[in-house]
Amino acid sequence: MAAGVSCWGAALGAAVGFPLLLLVAAPYIRRFVAGGRCESAARLDGKAAVITGANTGIGKETARELARRGARVIIACRDTAKGEAAASEIRAETGNPQVVVKKLDLADTKSIREFADNFLAEEKELHILINNAGVMLCPYSKTADGFEMHLGVNHLGHFLLTFLLLERLKQSAPARIVNVSSLGHHGGRIRFHDLNGEKSYNRGLAYCHSKLANVLFTRELARRLQGTKVTANALHPGSVHTELVRHSLAMMWLWRIFSFFLKTPWEGAQTSVYCAVAEELESVTGQYFSDCRPAYVSSRGRDDETAKKLWNVSCELLGIQWD
Image (cartoon, rainbow, N blue to C red; front, side, top):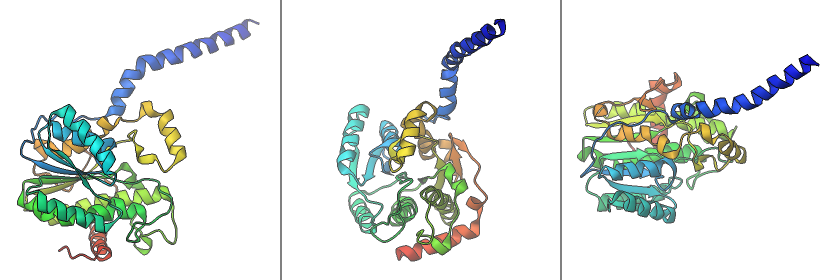
């Protein structure tokens, strides 16, 4: 009997003690989850920035922070109604009237070219290009040009956009290109024999493949831009509570259940802001960051031959010459 009472007492103590322990530890857990913060106080008055997918999530928070620093911010997004709502909110909060929205559908090369033509006709300078937009865990589908959706939006769409805006970036130098990749690149590989996933498709791996493509694109782009005063860096924003997992019901539920252990969009935007504004990164290029500091890149992400081949294949798929 005494042993039974002892067991019940231990169980009761654990039931009471564990929640208390979590309550005490919660601020420390949150601090760890939040990760690094951009400490730079750099102003961006007179600077112009394009941020793709800035109508929501970390893109929106990145736009808010750059606007707060005085930049002219162009929100490039597919859903312009949502973009206008975001822009209005940011203008009101920051007092910066130079936050505008332009239509951009990264799943359609015609839309990308129209965006670039419109931008180049109306904007004389571009100092920061943040390739932020992306899709994740999509059921198998193709873009308007027949590319697998993750490859088309996350890699090829931004590849083409950067190509079309690069001369304006060079003219405005010093300038920066920031590519939002992911820790998921560690699980990716460039399957040249089946880039569009027509022989074999896994939505999770397709995302990882596209994020590896972001890292390799950044690496080769930085190499080609040496001496131009235009830098290119990639980053992992962290596990962030955003709409990115909307294509997976299971992930949406997991994100809700474990939201305490995920970054907020503001926290997730910190490394993007850091790569865009930090003074100490003015001449740093071809690197990969996480939590506002350099991070480890997978061996596949450091393969220069694969990076060069992906560059050439991307140009062929898009019908462009980029030497």
